[in-house]
Image 1: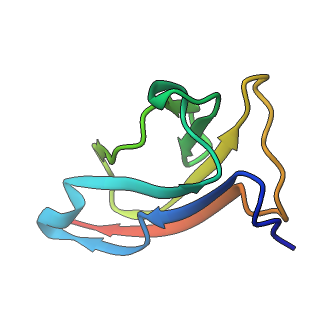
Image 2 (image 1 turned 30 degrees about the horizontal axis):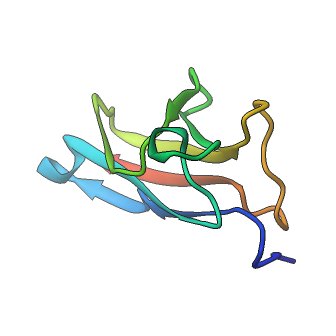
Length: 104
C-alpha cells in the first residue's frame, strides 16, 4: 500500500490514443508528492523511457514534449529516482509503465 508520507510519483500523461496532429508531439506529465526534483531544489529525478529505449531524466517539474512517434503501440515508463540512482519504493507506485497508441 502507499505510504502518504513518502515520495510518490503519479503518472498523468501520455495515456490512451493519439491521432493525427495530436500525435506529432506528445506530452509527458506527472504529479509529485513529498518530493522535489533536483532542478527544483530537491534530491530526486524522474527517469523515463519509451519502448524500452534509452532512459532519460527530468530534473525540473515541467511538461516534456516528445516527437518522432511512429504508428502503433508504444510503452512509456516513468520512475522516481533518488540521489543514489535507485527507484524510490512506495507501494509499487513509483515505477509506472503505460501503453499508448499512435495513429497518424
